[in-house]
Image 1 (cartoon, rainbow, N blue to C red):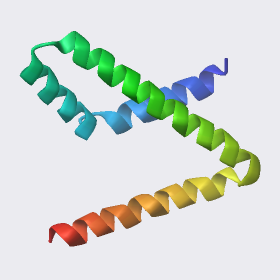
Image 2 (cartoon, rainbow, N blue to C red):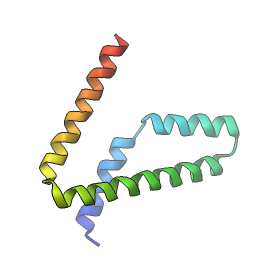
Image 3 (cartoon, rainbow, N blue to C red):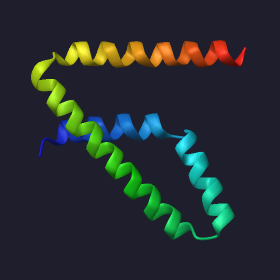
Image 4 (cartoon, helix red, strand yellow):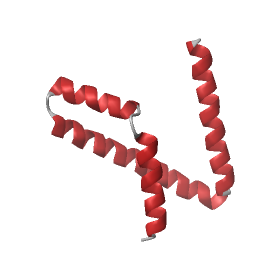
Length: 90
């Protein structure tokens, strides 16, 4: 295992996911259901599957497209979505 890649990935995902909408959903579900273990297990399983799909897509795209292009395309899509959300809200 490449520990440098592992630590960089862990740090990026951990910081990016702090206090996002997924955590707010988890808080709401746990407080409503009073079953925090079930909410935690459901959240972890869902995130594992989404992450697996993301990693598989990334590894396939990485064979055909330069990583820099993928990074710039992802950043561009993020900005476009943010602008569209901003424009719709105002």
